[in-house]
Amino acid sequence: MTRPDLLIVAPMMPLVMETLERDFQTHRLWEAPDKAALLKEVGGRVRGVATNGGAGLAREVMDALGALEVVVIYGVGLEAVDLAECARRGIVVSNTPDVLTADVADQGLGLLLALARRVAYGDRYVRAGHWPHRGEMPLTTRLGGKVAGILGFGRVGQALGRRLEALDMTVVYSNPSPPDGATQQRYPDAVSLAAASDVLIVAAAGGDGTRSMVDAAVLDALGPQGMLVNVSRGSIVNEADLVAALQNGKVAGAALDVFAAEPQVPSELLNMDNVVLAPHAASGTVETRGEMGQLVLDNLSQYFAGGTLKTPVCLPTA
Ligand code: 8YV
Image 1 (cartoon, protein in one colour):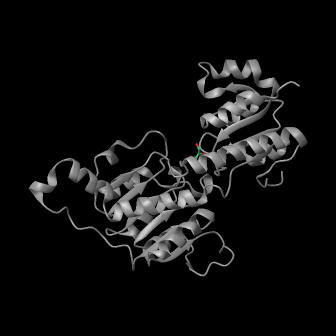
Image 2 (spheres, protein in one colour):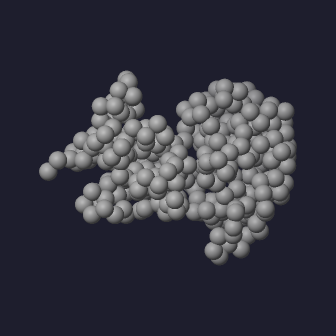
Image 3 (cartoon, rainbow, N blue to C red):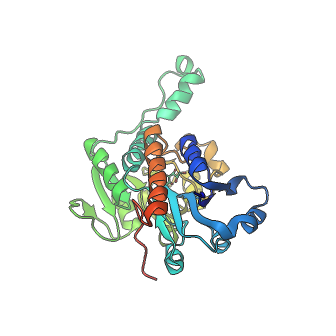
C-alpha cells in the first residue's frame, strides 16, 4: 500500500517523528532550504499536514497543497490555522485538547510562585555568592489572600483557578461567557479584571480576537504591586507596553512562558530581576508531549483508515 504524503511543518518529539516516517511519505518543511521549491515539487500530492500550535499552517502553504484533506495540530491552539478556510476547502482539522491542560496549569502556578516568591532570583543570588556577604535576599510576597484574575477561563484557566484556590487565593475571571458551573466573579473586560486583581494571569486563546488585549491600560489597572503571568500566547500581551510598564514601575513583575515572536524575547526583559522567563515549555513534560504525540498519530491513522478524526476541531460553518 502506498503511504500517504504528509507535510510536517514543525518538528515533534522523536518517537512521533519515527512513527510518522514509518507510516507516511514525509516532507519536512522546516528543514527545507527552499520551501517554495519543496512545495512545488510535492504540494500536489500532500494529503495531510502535521503542525504545532504556534506554526499552524500559513495561507501560502495551504494554497500550495491542492490535494490537502487533513491538518493535525500537535497542540491545542488553533489561531495559526484558518479554520473557516479549511472548512470551505473541505479540509478537516484536529488538535490535542485536554491532555495538556494540567501541565500548562502547573506551569502557570510554578511561574507565579517563582515570580511572587522570587525563586529564580533566589537561585541566582545563592549561585552568585551574595548570601554570605549581603545576607538575606529581599523579602518576597505572599500569594494566599490575594486576588488572581484569570483572563480566559477555559480548560487551562479553570485548572489554574483550582490550583490557586488551593493556595487560598481568590479567583476571579474574564471570559466571553461564564463556563458551566463557574461560581467565581466574572468581569466584563481585561481592564476591570486587572483593576480587581493582584495577579493577572493570561490563559485566553490567541488570535485576532485577543491580540494586544493586555496593553498599557490593562497594566495601569493592574498597578505597581500587580504581577502578570502568561501561559497562553505572546500575542495577547503588548510587549512594548509591558517592557515600558516594567521599566517605569507601573507593574511589579511578570512571568512569561510565551512571547510574540518566539523564540525571540524582548532584550529588555533579559536583565530584569523581577521577570521570570520560560521558553514556551508549559506543555513540555514527557508525559504530556507523549500524549499529544499519540493523539497526532491516532488522528492521522483514524483519518486515513476511515475518514474520521479522534479529536476533531469544531469547524465554523462556511
Ligand atoms: C505546544 C501550544 O508547546 O498547545 C499549544 O497550542 O502552544 C503548546 O502546547 C506546541 O503546540 C508544541 O510545539
